[in-house]
Amino acid sequence: MKRFLLGLTLWCICSSSLQAQVSGLANPEKRGFYFQTGFDVNYPLHDDMIRSHRLGVGVSLLAAYQVSPKYSTGLRLRYAYHLERQDYPEDYTGTEISKLPFSVLTFQWNNQVPVFRSWLAGIDLGYGMADTKGAPKVGLGWVQEYDGCARNYIATSLYLGKRFTAMGKYNVMMSFFFDNLFGEKHAENFGGLRMEIRL
Image (cartoon, rainbow, N blue to C red; front, side):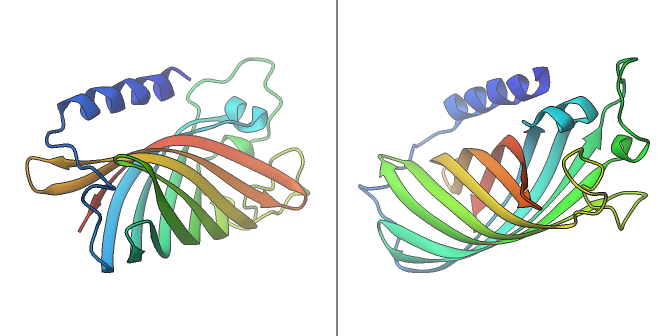
């Protein structure tokens, strides 16, 4: 939790230092295709994963089309790597597999709209596949609610972001996001902070 709060503090510092804020409605983007690449830090929000893992890091690539000043749509490819904890309480009951790092690859349909000024909101919908390092056929099957092998998920993500122009030329968006992986009647959730540059 401390690392997540540290990330939130860094976001606030970066936001205040970026220059020439872009007004999303006053200066709408022209119609056409664009790419957006970025990285993120995230933290598990479900009780099982909070006990077994801590910080995660991810990278993403978005290929999208600006349909109008008020709507863009596209496809997002994202890879996130989730680190295991370095210390476990003595009464921790997780298996050796639950102490391994894991990754999640997602392929999602992105929808994005402006909400006010330079703020944007979006939702990603699609497919996710998990891989526990050292136990490739397990996925997230070590989670108590799964049956030992859960690799495929419905992957959704909600986010709220603010756009800036950094150093006079880079179109940057900083956003908070909430990820949900749903499979076998159970969901795992993550919250995080993402920085993206529009190319």
